[in-house]
Length: 419
Image (tube, one colour):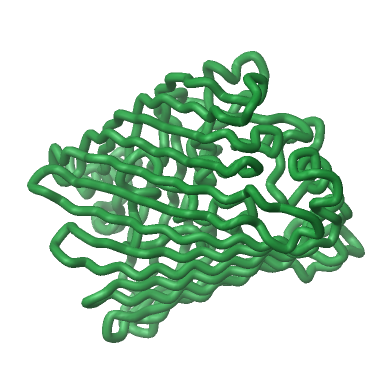
């Protein structure tokens, strides 16, 4: 049953006229794999994560989208997309005795509209939509390994460094996308971030973002975002976060491209609670409340289709954190990924991948990927995001300062189907 017939069947079940749902599309993705994750080399058996085998889910989703012709060149557009965990049927990550069996959740799974969801209007002048939207972290057609092809790509490409990205999938967004002119278009986005402000509190917090794209003999994408925090903010919480990503790709053949991506991220005025677990690794005085931290990196992405086989490879380097009052050296990381996907059809493929991150002695970059890919669940002062201090009940997914020097590795076999 194709997507339109499925929509008509659903409409018939509820007594809705067929003409009213002719532009409704039901779509989704099922992406499940078996993998082996480890993170060893920290120098202590107590802080290493020895190899564990998992059946896991990454990026599976179910959505409904459509358009309505309003006349005069206008169309209404909408989308409601939700993440699902096919491997467990759960929308939470356990941190107690059940953690070993439940595992991490894939990104944005909870209830309806947890992934990209919006409503708006479009025409020859562009598109305006409101809702939950992806800002900054995606690379469009420049690099799709991380978001669309297999289980996971390298964390640099989505801005998942020790110094974090300013935002990712973001709630309460208003965005405008220009029409495409000579292969170029742009999106500007704004999220007020003030819904939770209490009486008497400043409401100057906001996220602003810009994405500019070009498609032609070369492909290019520029992403910039600034997460301005509410001022004055509570002492443990760090200040404004800014990020910039620039990607340039050369599509040298159909289904083939080589691309270079540069990333630079900054977090200002770090909070007092951030310093404690980091200084335990870097040494007393390495970080002082109020420091502004920066981190940069670059990566190469390659993809090529040989008949029914899609070959994938990535390499990336992340520099030391700078801006510390003391010494934050030893936080570099090198990472690489190789993979192959056999295309059974236009929608279904089976794949094998190998990912490795080599952290320096004080580094703890991991495959967090914004969506809980790593099985590492750290509760209490071990977990840290460099934006907010952990609490006794908070959970941070990914390696922490206590695991510094560990080298995450993933070997996976999986199947993906888009419908």
